Image (cartoon, rainbow, N blue to C red; front, top):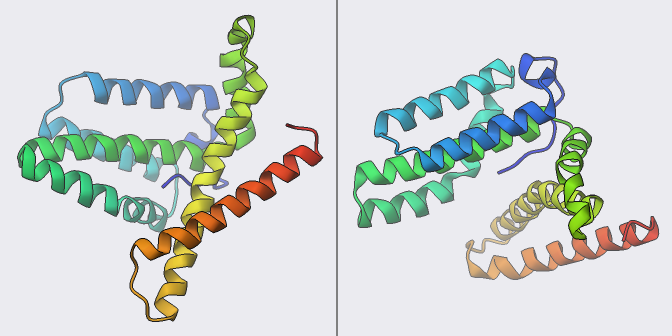
Length: 197
């Protein structure tokens, strides 16, 4: 769902990382706390899509981001449709999609180094409570960068299953976990070799 930096010179790319984080946090808070309507959610989604256009990202990028959310839409939307009805299902699912697409836009238009610097600055006051800002920011950065890596592993596992004529299912979880844990070990070894842990 969340992609890494895509170079560009648009107004969205040039906007500071701190401002973009503030916009994301404000939008997520507003979408979560303000009682929405079906029309306001449609407006929020239209606004997020227009931000992708403002960032001058290719249409395939937006389509790819939406495609990655298909299972979330099917599972969450389907469950809500059954239990609370179509309007509430649209509002709740649309809210989640808007926030995730906005978070993806943040990582697509902001270098990881800039995000880390902003997060480190925000977490600096926590040092007086015994929290190490560098460790927390590194953990967040690793988490963000691992999401597309694990998604890539999942795609490779699916392709391997299709090549063997096997159906996708729970059997694909084991090789995905093995690849993910192996990659985590390699990252841990690299960090240890550099004295980062």
